Length: 252
Image (cartoon, rainbow, N blue to C red; front, side, top):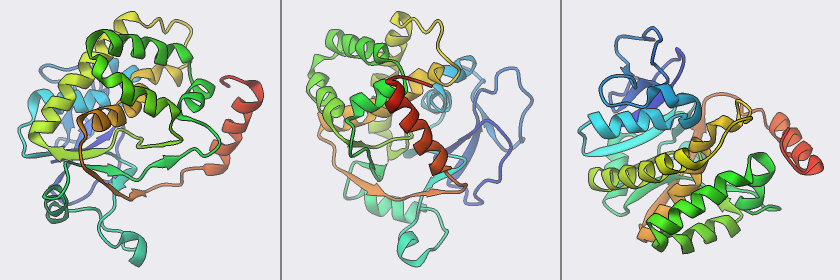
């Protein structure tokens, strides 16, 4: 099962492998009767503004029983084999996932390369340095064996983003228990008073970095798959925002 997280109505894949889930659903009308909602049973739906797609991930961890779990976004999917070579628009399917997971532990999106910045400097220019300081303190206290990989992540110039992955059940359960244990403790300690609406998505941002830390520490074997973006990514706007941050030495 691959969760497709969305906060709004949007066309979804017909393949039953893909299960749409309405995130931040608490207090809102259902988008579709065929979609899951992240506000039923044990949930953190009301924290969607700070946890982003992770409210859907948490719900799946607590409520879904599957052999394989994945997460993608209504605009971003793992592309199927031959997508780039043949410009085929199909998404990765169950047969290809099984074939890949017979050889590796985790399927991840291709890395994003920052080139002129480390992941630490990129984050500090775009968000708040305190986010990383508090996260590192939690790691140091709760699971110090992850600190070497954390430092590697800070110094690296590339990484897997968007909280996208596909893995089998045992690893998924282990990952979610580790990830949310850290994030909930960071949430207790981090003062986000005065954060912009964008920076308030802090736990989604931090989780993107923690995924690589977990994979490296566990020494998991992974393969990278291209990401197919359904809509324009607005790169000129993103580049302009990046340059403004560099010039100002901080956030917009």
